[in-house]
Length: 116
Image 1 (cartoon, one colour):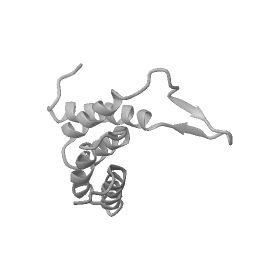
Image 2: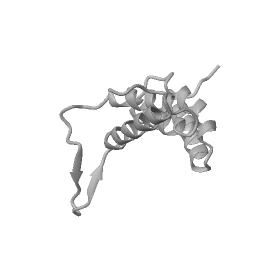
Image 3: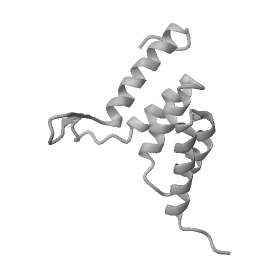
Image 4: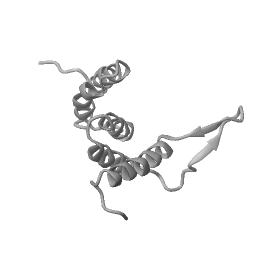
């Protein structure tokens, strides 16, 4: 039996997941993003996207995925930069950091998280 290359399979799963997100169906995207994690590929953006999808379904799970994503951050890389046209460039890490803070606050006020 012939199997497609891992890169192709990952690309198909990513496209399917991204299409579900684009059509406002993040819950349907989750299984495809999870399948990508089974492959030996760069998983950083997938971790972020899982956090993003779970925000609509389960805030605690979203927090877990964003936290997992933040573990992949290179401490030597600048947080915010400015591109050649003078525009500020914000990374997914900056966005995840903000999302983590917001989710912790929401969960705290919902009584689902202790104060740190």
